[in-house]
Length: 339
Image (cartoon, rainbow, N blue to C red; front, side, top):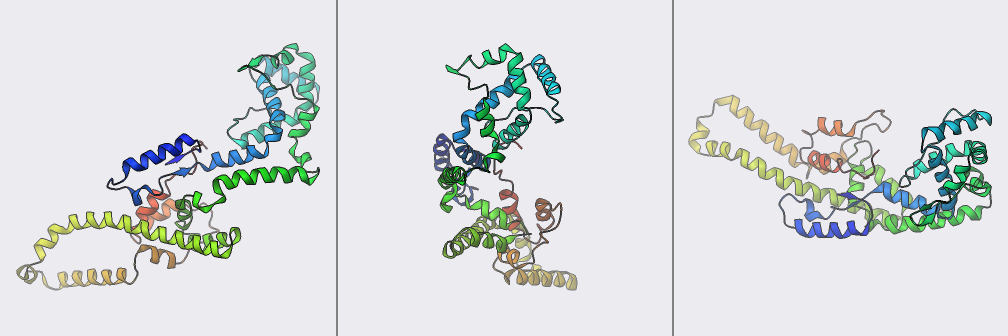
């Protein structure tokens, strides 16, 4: 279950895990039930880095909100753009504060219209009075001043003293460590999903671990991921074996007696029996689908428009149990934010 990082969601997951414990069909007792929204975590990390620029960003956001709040204001703003001879073909856009990339796009566009905003402020008295209005008991931040425009120009900010970005990086790293600093806080199914991409498998994941973590930690992580895959396989195989046993019980009953065996139709049935025996032998040469999948050749990682779900659909007969695992794990959303 993918949810954001509100503490109430942690309590809800704990309650839900307790209620479903013992239910038939629950994967590994709900051990991996909780998936934290990746987009929400990234947004928290970015906002932590921009915390010192919050007022400047809010001032620009309020200015954009004002000119986009009615067709008449927007038309007047376009007139200011023309008189300032701004050649940019786009227009200002309002962001969604919970999505940091939209905030970047808002600032990137607004910066190009700085002179138009300044002219608009001179010609529209209501623009300044708008910022004097209360918003939830507080005065609106803005209009943007020269320092605000300088602060939101991140490309110019990067040319200044490195200590500025150093402090930003430190605060962002602290927020990162809160959610992803310890591997115990990361749902192992996110790693398993990488392995279930036939272009990467364990080799790519192990390589990434070796870059990010120390060798001992990297080896432990790789082993945990592989062990989790075995555990998932065993859990899904138990469900599959039960359904297969029920389906084949009638057939077994009709062919188990010596009399029934004697009435089989000669070579045709003998050949079918031989094929079944060979198939069982080939399957037993490996412990399970996991071993066969990991030892089979990887797909070309440079293939364009590779559809991993289509691949598993086409190879379901080769990995009968592991394909069921892939079907469920690859369907887990990593974010609750609409794309």
